[in-house]
Length: 412
Image 1: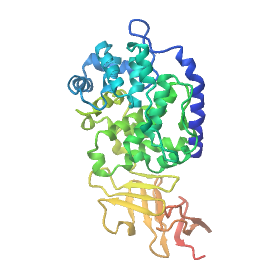
Image 2: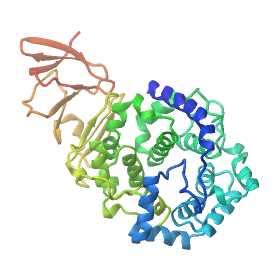
Image 3: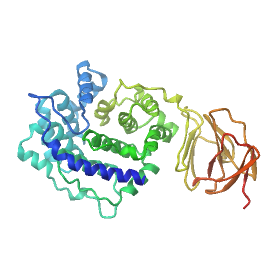
Image 4: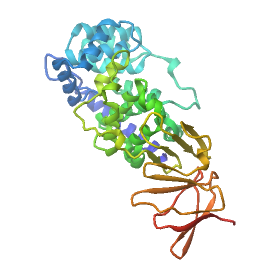
């Protein structure tokens, strides 16, 4: 993830250089040319939202009901600003500005209000919104930033067209590494990262995913598989919203289509609460979706992490093996880690004795041997040759497809 961190810093510099150019083309009022927004609302997304309103879809009805009835919503500024951007209702736009003036430390919502409702604010109001000094939101020196804080600061810098994003170079490498290890388990972190990627792309600062293409290609499937069976069957509202935002980043990925198939299901639709605005914003029914149950139920990453489930039912055995041979399970037998098991097209074989016979594996299937000891050396046979290889940081070793005979622990 070092390259990923460096890429973000390069793109931030690019954004600094282009911010003044974008200032010459701010979002205009609805009386003239169509507004051009810098955050989230691309012309294509805005047209889709307007079609939702015209057709009075369930998602629009849920969102409109929330705007009309929940005046104390903690995300009232975001909801009012979105309503204004879609409907051109000036009274709601003014409410959004007034909310922002009263909640000047909520950087993300302030940024969205400035971007979507800016022409309705007077110059002094825009100045007040853009220059709020919220020391309580600053990251203490040496502390690891979370993705929400990084996203919020970039959002506000884009919305206010600042030439300096005031982002520290130190710490990004650790932040990215932390996300790579665990961030996709947290829908809030994943959603913030998706908004960050989206904002940088919209504003011509490139795509930070290019430095870690394999990580992002597999992220939709890894995110889906990281949810335990009960969580996947009955998620809280944040999980499918993060999934929809991730799909929007690259809907053409095959794994994105599996994730879309899960997230867009009617049973996942948010009917009320703070999620309805996000459901409207990201729930694109026009994107292709494939039943997630067609996804092979396992993932093995370059970092040594293995996530697998026996099937897609709510009572499936689900396992998670991480570097250091840490293991977690749900719905599995107490001695699951000492018995061979099949997870889709994966066979996981614990090596509990000196040797084990290499199984006959159908084409397209994978065999992984688990020693429980990171770095353990093993000998596999390929024809007349012997190959010595070391297990990864989780104690796992993928067996070559051409291997035959026995797999044995090395004695020296």
